[in-house]
Image (cartoon, rainbow over all chains, first blue to last red; front, side, top):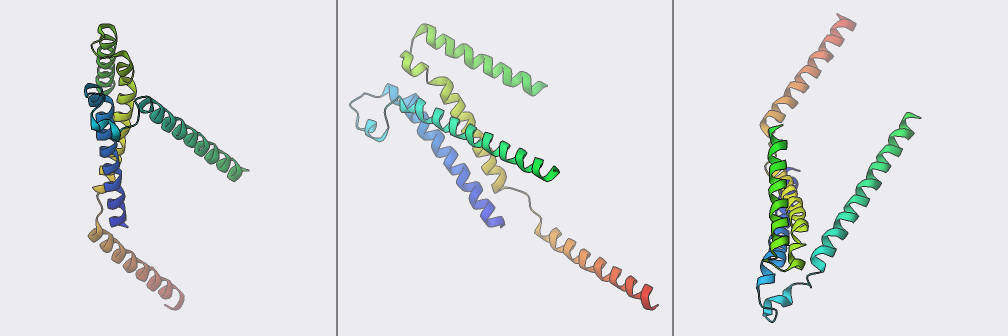
Length: 80
Length: 89
């Protein structure tokens, strides 16, 4: 159990660090690189840098709301 | 309370920097508009990293757990002994 927790923790840290590095490169460094440079092949167009985080945020918010609603309904059923 | 002041100062500084960038247009506007989203994404990454590190270095005490289990067994045995003494003693 302890090892599984450590692996999950390592995976979470790895995902967050790689996301941060990729996004930083995409948003901060890429505008200063020439548009015909080969590195542009590895990144989606700039609009997606807004669209993907907003979509992820909306999905997360929906999931949270559904989860909270589910928990409230469950606790009400227990009381009744 | 101090933490709130620190966070608020940081937020105000970032907002001022953002407005400055928007006004002076050193960087093209389409890229400047990305900055708030960039900060939100970095905050999310920081939170995820902290959760991951917390999971990785979560303090567990396996030796103490073993000792506690032994204590539990011992006390169970003692209660059983007392029960028998009460019935047949």
